Length: 297
Image (tube, rainbow, N blue to C red; front, top):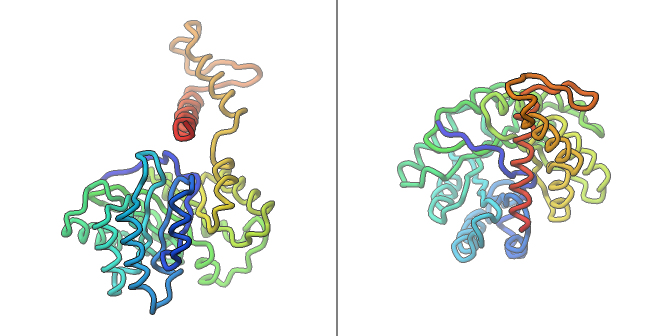
């Protein structure tokens, strides 16, 4: 069973594969992941054309650099003819990951994993899982712990589908959704799988989007799925370490590096007592900051 670290998944933009202009524009975006959508954004009669358009786009452009955006393909459900063709196409063009919709148990992931093995997909081709139904929430732990031959790259929360299925009337701050989102976050962290927050629908509400990103980071999400390029920079800022956080982390690492503190489990840093678990946290934050810095360079 292989797992992928949370690395950089601050921003993951949904790109409708049925929209040729959106595909072209996506090649120029500085974002952590591009999720090319063959499911919700393609009507039944245009799914085949959308697939072929995406095949051509990924085959001719692909990733321009090793540190470019992850190329993720959201396919249709595997129990549909479109889903099978989508999976074969994503495998053929060497996508980085395949996002399965409405995953309600590990069986869906295992089925996709077996299908990818049969078509000689590289072991590095990851699977991602959309958790967007009540059954998916109920079985989030089993989904995150699925025994696969390839990485389970992320769990992706689908708040719109969850709200619809549960009959929720969601207010600002999403308190009504928290009982549904919490089990997904717990499952992801328990199994070391990054969890991406769901989309924010109101493109005109920049303040609301920023607040939801900030709350998402506090909840423990690694990043957010997006519906428009204008949301990329705010998401990257919200889910990346701030200068103050970097300075605090550097101070913790320096303090534990002091020979006077060698072997100590707890030290005093200013007015705070700092343990070695805080050192591990600081080192992880600085490693993440280095990844972001290197991508910008």
